[in-house]
Structure formats: structure tokens, C-alpha cells
Amino acid sequence: AIKFDLEGIRNAANLESLDLEDTGLSSLSGIGQASNLKLLRVDNNNFVSFPNEVFDLVNLEVLSLSNNDFSQEAVPNNLQSLSAMTYFACSGCGFTGPIPDWLGSMQNLQYLKLSQNALTGNLPEVLETMMTLKHLDLSDQATFGLGLRGNLLAFATQTELTELYLHHNNFQGVIPDT
Image (tube, rainbow, N blue to C red):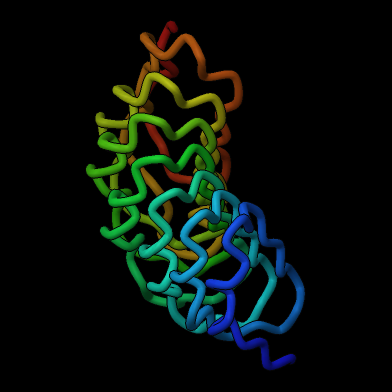
């Protein structure tokens, strides 16, 4: 693991993209000073809890945190404050609990990948209101916990949705006609 100090990042006033995947990083302290950051990829690192510093990045459009173990944490409510976000990936992060209804407020979100967590409950109907969503991956919840259950949603009005991954869960009932 490397020690990476982000305290001086405010001096990189034009920095829009930062990729620190596979670096052994365990903290994002100071990242909130990167006020123009639009893309942050910190997959495959050593975070033990969700890095709340990302909530200071008001211009963030792409956030990828996959394969960091935030065991027993729910999907953070503060994510909804990142209204510019179009891409959120947190696969293999150890999230538990239901898929939050507030996801429906993220009207710019096009890509949502929460696979390989331990999410439970039914698919919230609010997922059908996310008109910009193109990619939705909620697969492999039963591999790491009880899995998602209940009936599948029809997604009938989501003309932009081109990829839907729901395998390795515990859904029941009929597959919707749409």
C-alpha cells in the first residue's frame, strides 16, 4: 500500500479526471478540494468504509469504487447529492440492505452497477422512473447474501435501457411481457 496525500490537490485547478485504481489507497482525505473533478476511479483499493470525501465533489459525473470492502454498509444516502453523476459503479463493495428509493432522484444516471454485494429486498419501483438509465447491473446479490427477491419490474417505459443484469438473485413470478 502506498501513502498518497491529496491535501495539495486544490492546486490542480483544472484536474477533471483522476484514476487511482489498484494503488493500495485507503483514504481520500483532501480529495474534496478538487472542485473541478468529473471522473474518479478508485477501484480495487483498501478502503474499509465508504469515502465520504467524494460528497464534496459537486461536479462529479463518474464514480467507480468497485472491489473495496465497505462490509455491512448500506448504499450511502449522500450519493443523491451528486446530481451531475451519470455513472456509479460499486460492485463487490459489501453493501447490504435494500436498494434505496432515492435512486429515482438521480435523473442523470445512465450507468448503475451494484453487482456482487449483499443487497436484499424487492426491486424498488422507482427504478422504472429513471429514464436516462442505459445500464443496470444488480446481479450476484444471492452469491454474497440473501439476494434480491420478489417480482421483476417491467421497465416498460425505459426506452434507453439497453443492458439489464439481474442473475444470481431470488426473483419469482413471471417475466414481464415488455
